[in-house]
Length: 111
Image (cartoon, rainbow, N blue to C red; front, side, top):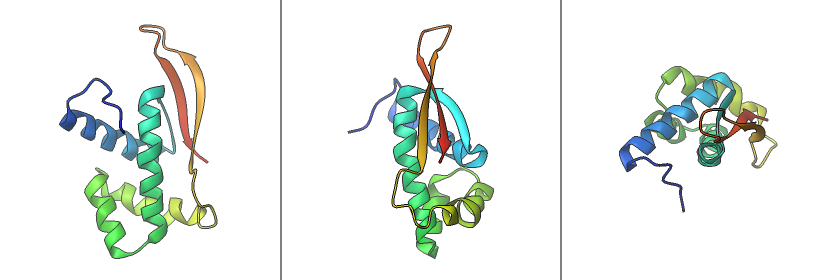
């Protein structure tokens, strides 16, 4: 089951697509803990697509990610680093609470 994160379905899907694209572009990102848990699932799926490396996987990644240069980076740079790893491509480190609303902030990075 997935988390609703306080958004309508279309807004939530776009926010998650955006945050996964940002993670793969920057290789580390700060976000809330609940968003990070959803982000981890989707980022691991994208890296698994990159490891497959065929045309269908590239088209699936292009359909999900928002930037073609990130898809190129995923298939050419990121996925080859994880060829012998069978999962767990992201690391979540807790940083503390956000000052304004007390939300738990984490750092998500590629291992």
